[in-house]
Length: 290
Image (cartoon, rainbow, N blue to C red; front, side, top):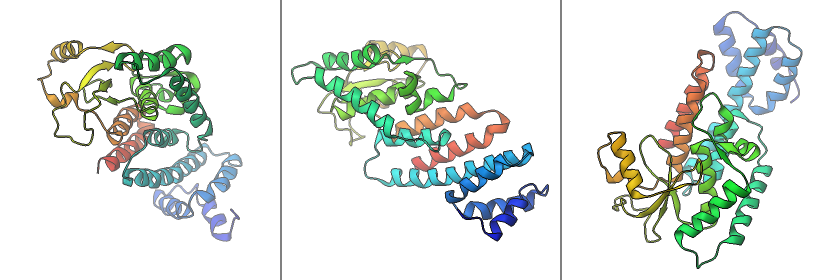
């Protein structure tokens, strides 16, 4: 945007040592919205002070965060929360200028490859085998244990780009494809794990009072696509000393899945220098839960 006298004066105050003055300057600059970001980037390039550069970087982040907040509010207000859109919103936290075109192309290519192999005569296990074969063998998606040192493994566009994610991000990609293909796979409310379940077609996903325990025919590990039985899950619950609870078998909706992603992603920013990012992600998670 064109730099007026006020912006010029505010830029000169960005290196003011008085935090109160800087706070007032920041508030006024943020009021201009994202249209002022190119000006801030130009200022950053022509600033020699590392402290001032860091202040400019934080200002740009706050401007992007405010835009992201507004978009999350809109997504959350919708009658239906699209899972891919929600995952892209989380990715924008770290990559605010993310272009989504390649993501949609990659997802559509995977969807079409799976669709060509599916037919109405396949059993549930055969349907899952088709998805698993395309995702993990043809596309060659790999899974890694949760590592909060690697932020990219939480972000859907990076998972598609590098073909590597963790159980949450791989699971989200699997769920996106299953939903596009009308395969009744959902995330399961299991403690300390993010796994998927193939639910019987008569299961009412909108009725959260429905007994869910045996509505899932089997379970899927999103790290590898391996299938688990009810017995496997029951043994896992015993191993972690979890009291049997039918709620563990409930299918999670998309809002809850994105909340799980945000809650885990924020643990990537435990360094005191980046604690503000963890706090912002917690705020987004709280926003979705309201």
